[in-house]
Image (cartoon, rainbow, N blue to C red; front, side, top):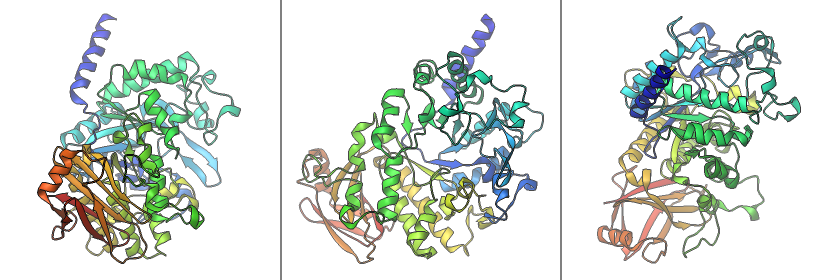
Amino acid sequence: MLLNKSIQALKGMVLMNRTQGISQADIIYFIITDRFCGSDASHSSTDGGKPSQVAGLNKLHGGNFAGILSKIPYLKHLGVTALWITPVYLSISGLCGAGGLLEGYHGYWALDFERVDDHLITVPGKNGREQLKELVAKLHAHGIKVILDVVVSHTGYHNGNYEKYPRRLPSGWFKNKEECTLYGLPELDHRLADVRDYFVNNIIDWIEDTNIDAIRLDSARHIDQSFWYYFKSYVRGKYRNVFFLGEVLDFDAGSVAKYQREFDFDSLFDFPLCGNIIDVMIRNEDYKPPEQRRGMTALAGPRHSALPEVSGVLDTDWKYNNANRLVTLVDNHDLEKRIMSWALLYAGGDSNQAAGLVVFVLSFLFTTRGIPQVYYGTEVGMEGDCKEGGDAYLRRDMPWEKIDQKTQEPYPGCVVESFIYRRLRQLIKIRLANEALQYGYLFTLYSDFDCYVFMREFRGNTILVALNNSPDPAEKVIEVEVAVNPNIPQRIKNDLAGRQVLVNLMDKQEKFQYVSPGILKIKVKGKQALILKLL
């Protein structure tokens, strides 16, 4: 017993040295492992990312650990620094539904919380956790951190496949059906001591056995509050170096923020900001009466005085322990549409115009506060709308046939894909090169219905961002008064006044100067963003 404890302590010490956690300097790339890349073509039921049949979308497509390894050059070329993979648990299969046979391809319908699903591993018969650990080590060797998705709220559906499994969880660990609200999935009762104890130790086992850098905790708001005390003291107490990211799919900042304040998450997904980005920058609040539309002031209210005249979503950042550590996003596997599908809808089906909208939105995502997350395929304009046929339509296969394996970029003939990819890669480079965009405080300089101008500054590294959300492509002139803004420290004002010139990082030939002391005149076209760096 003493020897076992010593071994566990040694594993913990090794883990402290190897895991790195996620920081504000990271760029997160999220994949559905089964749909990203794999070697088992026999499972594939898609053609160029388009479904050949609805039933096929709910089956395994063959993505696996080997597929991830083969695409490390692609991830490196794009510039991402952290890879979030879906749960690796052995999952249920054999559920009969309207679409025929359903399989837990996504990993969220667990059958065994301790075993890696066979379809993910590459060496049959070899321990699955060991293979995951090797995958993590190889990604680390290339400077890519790993976020492992874990589930503690529910199992897969209790079909015949589940009931026959010898290592299924005890039936007494589950809530009554009347208490379950998560799509009819069997929910675990964390009011029970044995359930809490099992899952906090299960999380620690995955951390210690694989050297992952972060845990993404699925469906956090569906877990009873009694679980969080044990989570904080038992898991968080020791593994402070492991980054914990919670999913609370709610668009109200107060509802999301309490999980960071009360339950000790390092970060949460910023769905409140995501919702406002889509509503304002893509949809132009078309579902609201004109008199209720706020435009860009819904993101941040004007800051011409010490307090905002009107509060936007960024003005509610005080509700969080640290809003700068929130993970920001514009699409994922659970939301209504991929960002390209939103853009196409509001561009009248014009793919070139839609690509411009996507880049406009990504320009804000990569310059505002928080840690940006990119959903696989967003960089090449992948489409997806769950209203077409459920979540699987958001989770189609990555279209590798459009990517040149030599250049790791879309082929020249893929015009729309190339445009989005190259602009996103440029945005990633800009963010990684400027600590202001990673750590700097966000100062709102100007906002009205159409335009929003803000500044990020860190130790003399200063970035200004100007966004014109007007559907009118005409250029708009914005005069930004910096010297009289009471929210900007005098140190930064002096620095600004002493240098005067800013260059547009997306087009380095374009420069701006102060027209008078403390006033900057910026010209920006409709549905475009300028990212300006002080020289």
